[in-house]
Length: 403
Image 1 (cartoon, one colour):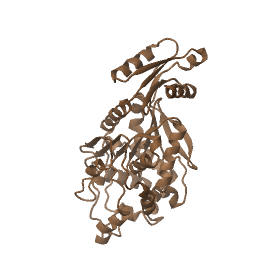
Image 2: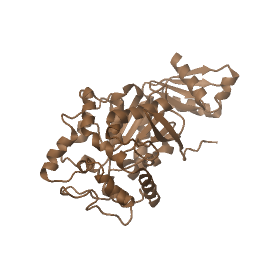
Image 3: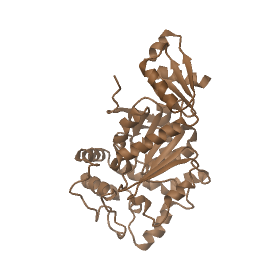
Image 4: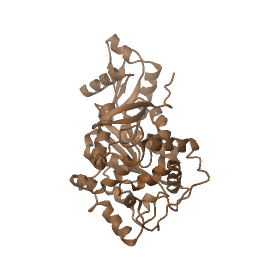
């Protein structure tokens, strides 16, 4: 019977002094997905099962401050050093002997780009959505915003988020109203005001749609409303309050590029790509990513890339993941005493992507029993077949390490 990857398992992962909730499904090389604001692990709901079915362990975390994860009070607990250390700890917990692939959206994109720089040995490949990697700026981001918006009397949402308690009070007064208006305004169906004056609130002037497109159901809205009603907004907003601190943390990497295989996906109607006028942010990313494998701008899609266009987004991700794992790979077939139908199918699949296959025969009958199930597991430069369970996975890693 084929495994059912539709329902993820929820785990609590101890990392970097906090506990993070993670939705996990699948068996194979680890892919960690990091959400943005105002989202949740749930924003990856369309990607979980397809990634698992494609041969990966799909893990979508609740970032600290969100959902079922810990919610430290201090602003500085949400700076980029802490956020990247959280992700590195998730990799250590779920893939202790092999690097992982990272995928991030919105704030999740800067988090995974930064993790690829600050914890490079733990990251095999990295993809970002909506927010490209454009290098370390010459000045903190909000100084640029001050010049382009504040000094001209214009509202900018990240400036509005700076004073503790202000945005929290607005959003928590009617969580459903906030969720509906925010998701609609930043989607391909909505409009984000660009000439709002300072002094207005974030929700002022935003439409509450009569109904969303098929990409956002009432059940989806209910899930987000439930998460933020329980967790509040202080943690998520604290991420925005570390702008100057993040810039200082990034200084050691100001001359660095993203070296891992990378990918960028965004919606053609995403306000992020347009908020600073005629600036080609994608071209800036090409200059700062040494191994950029692809850029996909999805037509008629707004900010919520993987939710508005789940099939296109997932397809691009899986194609890129297979390409990234196949280049330079070596396959190890752990033969548990005679081929099964499953192992033959996997052997043929490996041959189809033209990587060398090395067989390791297991003579110990107790070890053979551990290899009842096989899955294709990519380990950076080494791909191996590992069986079901931690013991057989460790054995696979040990076998690969000896080759």
